[in-house]
Image 1 (cartoon, one colour):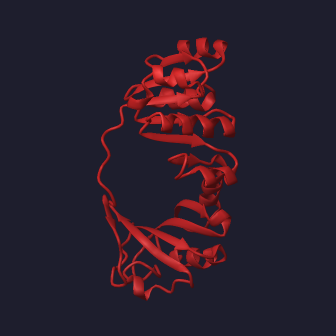
Image 2 (cartoon, helix red, strand yellow):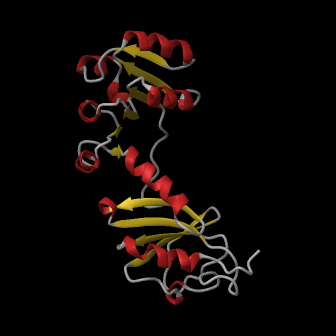
Image 3 (tube, one colour):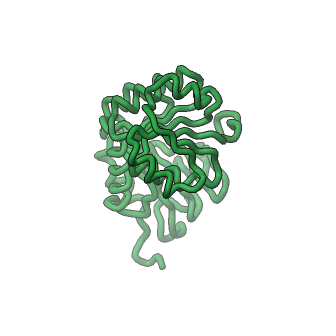
Length: 235
């Protein structure tokens, strides 16, 4: 919605043939040209037996000569998914410097992820933050689709589904300006079917809308959840 479409990704290199690298390759090898770099020779043989279309390379993902030999400059996505944060960051930085269009790294330490993302690494994935978000979707009341912890847990972004009608819901059939949102809560967008709506104060929420809210103070979560709950008369 905010930028021009990227060209289609085609070539992917995965640094690390562990469980994550193997599952990732299995998932995408039917649609992309995938190579996996793995330093353990025995693991390479196991990967070669289980992956049908993926090319398995025995070597160090931080080996500049190896990356150049595998045409890293023509790689669309480079994914560093070993179990070593430092190795992921360094190999992703090297791949980026050598010409990879986009680099992704799994970084377990949140402090490392915050430092690396957007500078040395295009996308830093924190398993801890993803896990927290998934757990929160089950803990939060109301129909919560996704939760993302922001500002080291001080704030949250939430995607909630509006149900009911004007009689059974405090949000459906009402404009954004009418909503009794707690202080610091902002409606950032509404996903309505296959359309994305950037609301104004006059935008009216409809049933089944996916409403994305940003909360500067996560202590206000309970107020937002109550707001999106429907009355007991809703069936």
